[in-house]
Image (tube, rainbow, N blue to C red; front, side, top):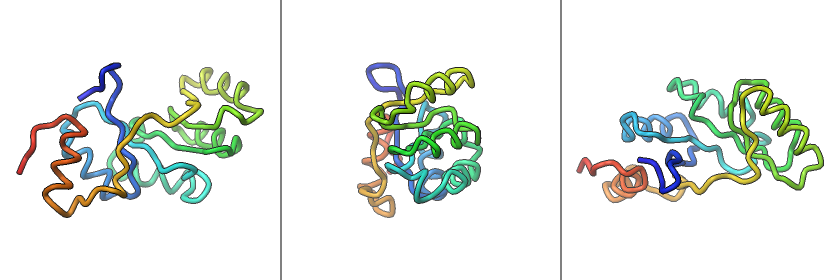
Length: 140
């Protein structure tokens, strides 16, 4: 399900298992998989890409580089088509032009998202909550 502006529903994932669960539950509906804030710095670009690649979901990934322009540029070069970077970073305008030239987007802020670190996917109510967020019929 898309939100009222026609954008995919966004979910913050912290591992391949969560990403797989979201994709299975979404069943082809528009969804984006967002990293936690600043994950480009502590998880690494390759780390988040591995989470997505485990499910062939790189095109759905949004990597948050916080205030690290070098990480944002490296993420774009690594194939991410959407990267979050603080607009206060002096290099933001230049990186925004580079991203556009690559057919990618540099966001000034992460989109509204459901953070799965706050959802108990091992419990029926957690799975129902995620299903409602994604706009899919409840399966239990």
